[in-house]
Picture (cartoon, rainbow, N blue to C red):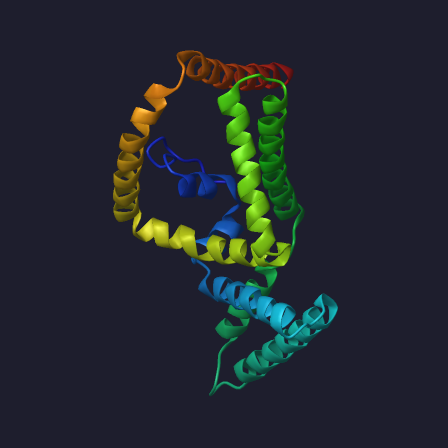
Length: 234
């Protein structure tokens, strides 16, 4: 189940993320389930260290993690069975945490839908550049691909996954608590950049700028048309 957001709440990417993902995933990303969030963050960093620097294989790493998890859960159950040391509530909390890691059909669909949206967006961006003579649009796509190529020189795919995992478990909760400060700094930097870039944009031929705007409008128009067609089909 996803949460419906108002317009004021959906004005930033973090709120949009909260509205798109399921409640269980939101509880982990925004640290409402602190035990699960801490375990996943620890696992992501420990796995990266062991694979990248200790040259563990994924099968070996996964087996060791399962062994450690089973041993830890056994100790917690054993402690809770002794009335002096624990209580049935500890067992219930542990069982709830274990169940939260279960990959349900809804979680799999949510993940595949998220990945599919990013893929379709990138595919459309590149294909539109191949079908236009708009120099600015082609340069934007070329610059983006060059940045990705340079990024890939220094970071392996596993490192990218590690960075993305840490970002996903750290940035949303920081932004939620420091939203006003971050937005203020972002707007200040954006104003400075646009102020410096405005003279350069004015020097560009009007035909290039107008064609770039028409391309973006055509893309938005095609999205609106596809959206209305989908609603009619439904």
